[in-house]
Amino acid sequence: MITTRLCTLLGIDFPIISAPMTGTATAELAAAVSRTGGFGMIGASLNPDPTWLKDQIQAVKEKTDLPFGVGFINSASGLEKSVEAALDAKVAAVGCSFADPTEFIAQAKNAGVRSFAQVQTLSDAKKAVAAGADVIVAQGSEAGGHTSYMGTLSFVRAVVKIAGDIPVVASGGIADGPGLAAALILGAEGVWLGTRFVASLEWAGPEWVKGQVVIADADATILTKVYDLVTDAPFPPSVGDRVIANTFTDTWHGREAEMMTRQSELNEDVATATAAGDATTAPIRAGAASGLIRSVEPASYIIRELMSQAEAVLKNRTKTLLGG
Image (cartoon, rainbow, N blue to C red; front, side):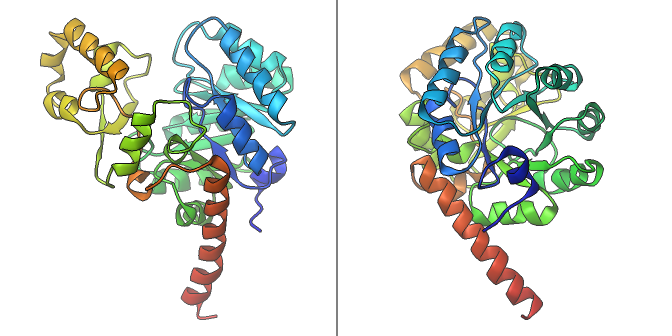
């Protein structure tokens, strides 16, 4: 069985963390991942009221006594009470993303809670190392939704080289066992999966989004800023947004200045399309690994399949290459 330093640190069986997708990685998914031996994460909402998050944390605790965590989009404002709620609840870990992680890591340390720092640049990775993050998540541009412009392969390796004793987790373009095996070979201690868990029974997002992920090909996604710009989303300029390409992105990607002259109208169009499940206009955030996903499965099945595939690859492929 594959065991890494991440497993030892977090007290889990498998080096798989489910990404804390905002508002859609709920208690059901987090509990299912943790019960299976991975590390489940709740994706905190952007609502300043911490009530929803408190309810989600309690719901996970009612389903399992195994470790889980909460992830935050720290570039958004008004999350102070939600962060306090997660720390007061003594979840096993809290995650920071899209902002300087230094203050967040210190706050987690003071509360006796482990910290995950998701980083998209080497500069932020160095800040996470200096601040003493317990885990650094190196996110490459193949990731779904909000992500960097650096490729996963080179970025993960670069972060591993500066991380010292801090475990690095690979994120972006990983959806199967060979991807997990590749991340481990790079020196990562585990993987952080979003898109693969979008296509799970427990993901709380719309069913039509799951369907779009399943039918998407490997070249179906685009890294763009159009949705963030038109909706005034709270992400830094250095961060892109990987979505499944559609009529909206075909029309406006590369024509952002013109698009912004019609911002109010187009923002309303996007909101209407999202409510109606109109995939031609609504954003469908998914990674480049969508082309590897062909079915919606229980989270437990996904984790066990990944582990079985990864073990087979590491055993058989290595033996073949080394002539053993």
